[in-house]
Image 1 (spheres, helix red, strand yellow):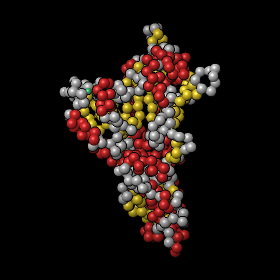
Image 2 (tube, rainbow, N blue to C red; image 1 turned 60 degrees about the vertical axis):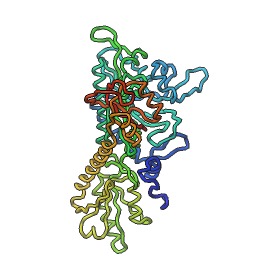
Image 3 (tube, helix red, strand yellow; image 1 turned 90 degrees about the vertical axis):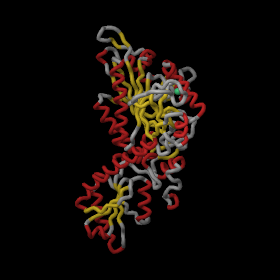
Image 4 (cartoon, helix red, strand yellow; image 1 turned 135 degrees about the vertical axis):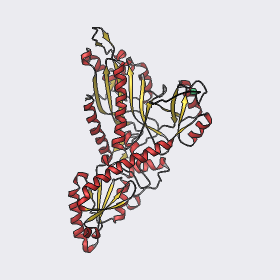
Length: 475
Ligand SMILES: [Zn+2]
């Protein structure tokens, strides 16, 4: 990287300029020759692998098996569930190679192709619950501007598809998977989320209801991080999925589907980064430590030898040892701060004598001198501390981003201050559509799971309030 290219020109407070610049310069992703598509570079792909590792273990605990279904979906399948077909219509890419055969959709989601198989595989109540997940790529032919990780025509995700005998089981596990997503965001990516129901307008096309987790970004906009849909029995009816019950009669089962995507990487970058670059939560950082020897002519050899010993000692943290002689230590500091390496270790002639090293935290810049004999233990503690600090900082941001609005005036003030407004709401489709006509980008974010006491009038339309809801500007 050239000297003039290092460092960011945009400040984090100008998030719309900062975000694309930091994604490119921190080496997380790149644009490609194909419009609307992105290249996921190794450090970002590692984050995705860690998400996969974490979630695959959870899936095993929840008796969900991994499988893989075709990328292509016959048009006739797609049309079987009318609401679903209508909802995805604008963003489906089609293949029509052969005049004599049916057009194929490139999957924007796989309910239809998977449930066609389920209709042949599920026979009796003994087959239930039936739980599969697939890790796959998805195509949604977006016309809006590309945003790396957040809006691209192709992205990676997992989609779970389960089938149950009863609504109760289906409700229960639809929530379980949402809770798993919340836990993954918290434990792995240090992202706190709001969780709740999507409004009728915003739910998944064809679902009975949609549960969602939403992270709040530094500009006050919400970013959907995962969804879990109770699909009811409609897909089962459309695809002829039936099981012979204990009562020896045929029944349509209940189904859910749930997913998270590489969008989470975008949320992580946007939430934790600063004016110097990205900050990787230690749990998903490929290199958790970078070792930078401070070299002077007379002590060079000894310091390099010591740095190599430290590299071996710290192999659990997969440290980078930067022995490049061309750049100054200061240049190197900036470079690894840009790339978000959680911890920097500096070792120079003074440290050599004192049998110590200096550690510098990426999250708050604090310097700590540590004796070599304590190094491994201390680094483990500090990395945990960084992980916790990132989560706490993001939690404070989330808290300060949500404000209660008791009337239309307060609501509009909250919105213009780029906050998420918590209001009493009538839960009506027309109310939300009217609002959208007035304030184009403002939507309901979600209806929190814990509703509390609801009374009085809808803050937006003044009809009877039925629910508590968050409104704001989503990504
Ligand atoms: Zn209303």
